Length: 316
Ligand SMILES: *Cc1c(COP(=O)(O)O)cnc(C)c1O
Image 1 (cartoon, rainbow, N blue to C red):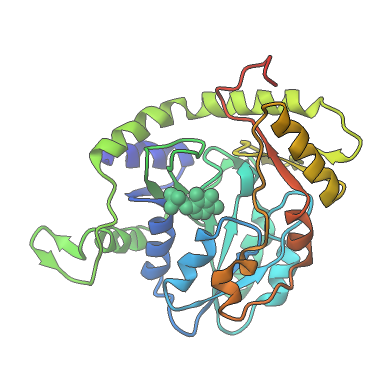
Image 2 (image 1 turned 90 degrees about the horizontal axis):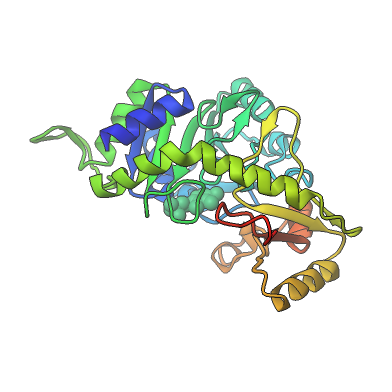
């Protein structure tokens, strides 16, 4: 486990990496270590995997949903700015599908309003903004679940340059221990096992190679021209690692037709995500209503097509 932490910290260019039992527990324990709780608000994108927002609910705090950009599908800094209140403590940006969110804009907002920037990098191991790895700008939370760009079977990892925060997190994930027989705070067992970590170490060694294969496949996919379909965008300052290759169809009907066509020809494809997070029953039942028009619109038009590293050129 120590070896994975050391190598991952080095890879991301940060001082500290802390291995956890999952990406969800990584997000959860970061918010706990920051002391975020009842009465606090945390801004999250409305278009992401539900775990991003749930990590806020776990604290008894309020997730506030911001809309995303139709170009990159990542959290929209302009919409975030409008949702900051006196209660806001942090922003969780998601480097969605392997493309970094606008790190500069969100960092600036965090600086101006004294907020903590958390990077949900569960889908973006190795992605870069201005030549620097994601997870090195705020507090990074990675998932090492089986489907991600690198895996340990199950697992997560937190990256930070704040050594005080890191030691608090290390206590929280290990029974509140400050040393072997001293339990100073209420802690959990959110540790990663050495067995899982050893898989993680082997995967990290191959991460750049795997991401390059994904990027090459993306280049091939990009040559497929369909009038009604827009390919994923890679911003000038961004390096995309294509956790998913997500196209944006002209309309919901085109998306459904393309999906049917591909499935009927034995090509797996899927919709990530079919609705904004706050449209899920969990959030609807809490009284959330949708007011993120871009998320609502694109959720009807996106389609993820295969880009995993074992995909062969002929198959593409
Ligand atoms: C996978 C994922 C998570 C959760 O990670 P787990 O390891 O499955 O708990 C959180 N956020 C995003 C964006 C994810 O894709």
